[in-house]
Amino acid sequence: MPRTICPRIQRTSLHAMLRAALRACWRSSLPLAAALAWAGPAAATAAHADLARGEEIVQAKCFICHGVEGESSSPAFPRLAGQNGAYMLRQLQDYKSGRRKSSTMQPMVEDLSEADFRALGAYFASRSTHGHEVLDPELAQVGQYIYKHGNPDAGVAACAACHGANAHGTESLPRLAGQHAQYTVNQLRQFNKRERTNDNAVMHGIASKLTELETKAVAAYLSGLK
Ligand code: HEC
Ligand code: HEC
Image 1 (cartoon, rainbow, N blue to C red):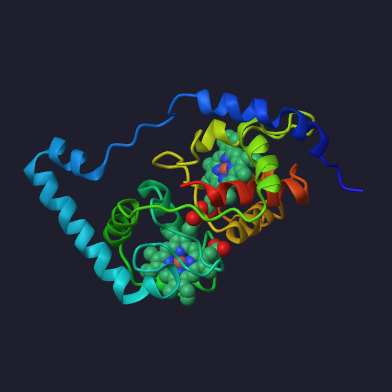
Image 2 (cartoon, rainbow, N blue to C red; image 1 turned 180 degrees about the vertical axis):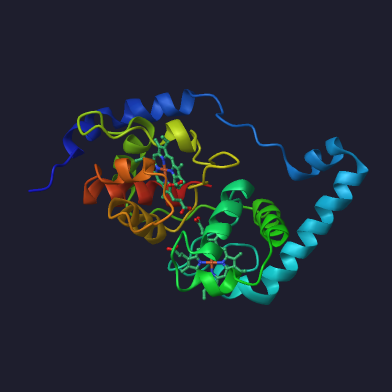
C-alpha cells in the first residue's frame, strides 16, 4: 500500500490555499522591454540581435517539437516558453557535451555554439506563457499542498522554496509553471533513478521521497499555472 497524504491534505488544503494567496510575489521579473530600455541603446541592439538569432534557429530546427513560441503542443516535448536563460544555457551545454543524455536532443545542439545557446535562452525566455486546463482539480490540490509545503513526514522540501511561489524559477533554476504534466512526471522519475545524468543530486533527494501519487499530483498542479 503506497503511503498517501490525501486525508491530511483534504483537511488543510483550504487553509494552504489562503496562505498561498496571501504570500507576496516571490520573484519580480523585469519585462523584456523595460530591461532593454534600462540597459541603454547598445545593449538593446545586442539583445535584439540575440532574439533574432534565437528565432532563426528555432524556426530552422526546434519548432518541430517545441513549437515556434515554445508552446510545445505535444506532451512528449517540454514547453520552453518563459524558461529561464541561464538554466537553459546549462541544459543545452550539457546535451552537447553528453552530460545530460538524450539521443533526441544531442544531435539538435551538436553544431550550435555557446552564443547560439544564449540567443535561444533569450528568445524562449521572452515568449509568453500559458497554463493548461487542469482535468483533475482534486489531484491538483494535493499537488498544490506538496508544492507549497512539501511533505514534512517524508522529509520532502517545499518545491516553492527553490522554484518560487509561482513556479517561475530563477535565472538559473527552472520554471515549472505551465509545463506538460507528462514531462514533469518523466523528469521526476528520471531524477529518482539518477537517469537525469547532469543533476546536482538535490532533485534526486527530493524525487526519491515522493510517492507516485504525489509525483502525479504536483505535476498536475504545475501544469495549470501560467
Ligand atoms: C525531435 C524533437 C525535438 C527537437 C527538434 C528539439 N527538441 Fe529539445 N527536447 C526534446 C525532448 C524529447 C526533450 C526531453 C529530453 C530529456 O528528457 O532530457 C527536449 C528537451 C529540451 C530542453 C530541456 C528542457 C528543460 O526544461 O530542461 C531544452 C532546453 C531543449 N529541448 C531545447 C531545444 C532547442 C533549443 C532545440 C532546437 C535547436 C530543440 N530542443 C529541438 C525534443 C526535441
Ligand atoms: C533545494 C532546491 C530545490 C527544491 C526544494 C526543489 N527543486 Fe526542483 N530543481 C532544483 C534544481 C537545482 C533543478 C535543476 C536541475 C539540477 O540541477 O539537478 C531542479 C529541477 C527540477 C525539475 C526539472 C525541470 C525541467 O524543466 O526539466 C523539476 C520537474 C523539478 N525540479 C520539480 C521539483 C518539485 C516537484 C519539487 C518539490 C517536490 C522540487 N523540484 C523541489 C532545485 C530544487
